[in-house]
Image (cartoon, rainbow, N blue to C red):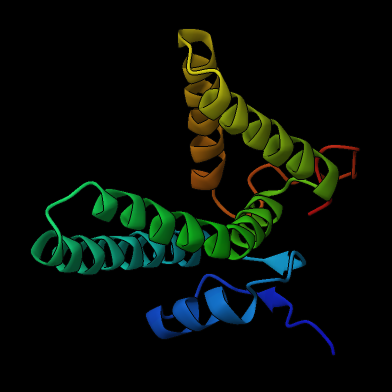
Length: 161
């Protein structure tokens, strides 16, 4: 089975962005423009809000006890784990479109994941601050225009224009 490689241009439509998010959900190759990236993020957040409202609404009316909170957390955790691969693939494609090569993207994603796990295991001011700084840096990178970091001669960090 051949994976769908997403290679978007600046003229991407809303429909294309939504379809490419799911078609390229396990494809770390290709490129995603800013518009498509942010549409994918908004789609993820909208699905999260709908799931929260459905689950919370159902369990708030069905149960007033503490078991409903655990079910909500389990449903959210399952959804977050299911969305981890498509969101990571989208981030890879977006950062590649901005001009980074695969190795620096992988390092950034691993650092972010390690900091997130450390934040869950050892909730401390330092862990929270490090995670916030890493995620703020990633958000800045996600906002960079297409080929803004691409260089004339390829390096270990930046790809060639």
